[in-house]
Image 1: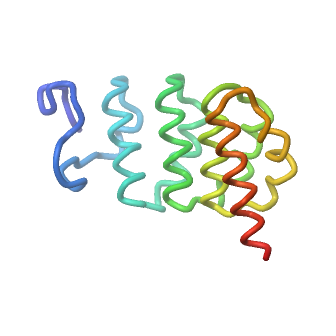
Image 2: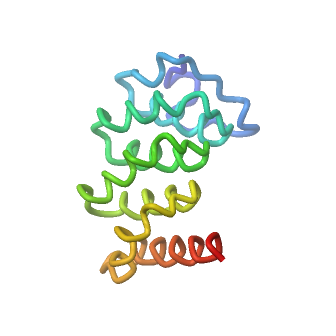
Length: 143
């Protein structure tokens, strides 16, 4: 487990392998520890953590960490998380929607096209841009 003394409250510098997390870090009361664990899984593309991340996404209270989890699910190629991510599009508001769309695009979730199509006109530029990127990517996939 990482402590604030180990990092002085900032992310570890250097090779991604410098930060070694333990499974209990995902359940830590410390947001920094949880965030570092999620980012590490994401950067290392550790697919064996997809179920843990999906569960964590449903219980995590920090909006920033939730966004990291969504991005991690896309980065690790978690196809099992597609239904959860699609459900999030129906319920969530704000910047996390753009992250969900980006992850669904990484996962080539063509089944999300209908729900993402209207989001290309979102007032949030992050959401609109990711929606257009997603739709363009799915068009290329089906061509």
